[in-house]
Amino acid sequence: MSESSPWDNIAVPGADFNVRQVSGETAVPCFWGRDTTGACLFIVELKGDHTHQFRKNMVTVHGIDVDLRGGEPGQQRFVLTLEKQVDRDLFESLCRTLASALERATDSASSLAVALVHIRRWKTFLSGRSQHLSAEEVRGLFAELTFLLELVERQPSTATAVEAWLGPEKSHQDFIFGNTAVEIKSLSGTERSTVRISSEDQLESLNDELFLRIYRLSSLPDAAGAQSLNEIVAAVQMQLAEAEAIEALDRKLVAHGYAPLPDYDQPHFVVSDVRSYLVVKHFPRLMRSQLPTGIDSVAYDIRLEAIAPYECDNGRVFGGN
Image 1 (cartoon, helix red, strand yellow):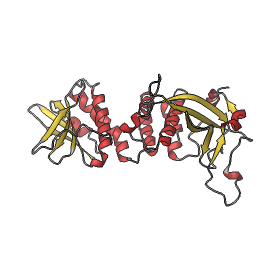
Image 2 (cartoon, rainbow, N blue to C red; image 1 turned 180 degrees about the vertical axis):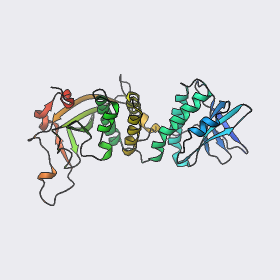
Image 3 (tube, rainbow, N blue to C red; image 1 turned 120 degrees about the vertical axis):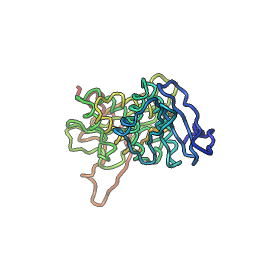
Image 4 (cartoon, rainbow, N blue to C red; image 1 turned 45 degrees about the vertical axis):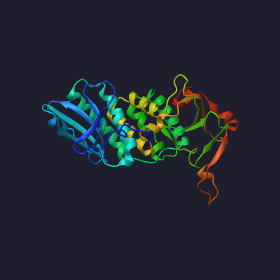
């Protein structure tokens, strides 16, 4: 959780709730708030009666109370209440991104519609709350999403591209599409020139072609095109055309241990180098089918200089020459 939050300076009221307006230009007023129990609130003030719209599209979310309440005459309040303080960082991210989304609404009805859709998407992240990703896991996920962006441009549908991403499902390789398997690895800009292969299955495949693709990521916050993990997730989401693809992506991000927390606004990466290798017969690797009886759960490092003869054009991964 960030060192300070928008609720820190809001006193617990003796009745009703205390609020502070959210900065930014939205079609309807939005407020940070606290109720008499000290719970954190996010309130959207609506003009008119939206009871039918709310009941028709109502969303239930574990850990957050979603309610439509009466307000001043001719008004209603859409209220989100956090039930567990331990989830405050995730709730804050939900509310901040909701406030940004509401900048695109035009009136109270469209604001409520945007809010309900937004919460429905966040339901996946909230239900799959997990531990924070390590620095290495952040780099690994960033690299996989970088490849997914490339794949989206080359597949007949965005849903097909997301379906090909199997890393979150503990597949032996991170991507399988057509009869091609691709294992993704990341290196930091300062790491030695080796990659860690975490099992005896990663470089063995029944597919016609298997590639090892390595992204070298440099942490350069001021460089042109630098992105955080949250930003590359948003970039992938923007490219997805089908609702089923968006839902599938969210499920896979949760399976990967990701939630859109402020922690992942840093660091910012640029891809400083990309190399692809075709894994064929004499490629240096350990495979389950060739391990001595009784040997299992193997992890090892491969020197990049040793696989230089197997390097291929990056387009070859997608069927190019």
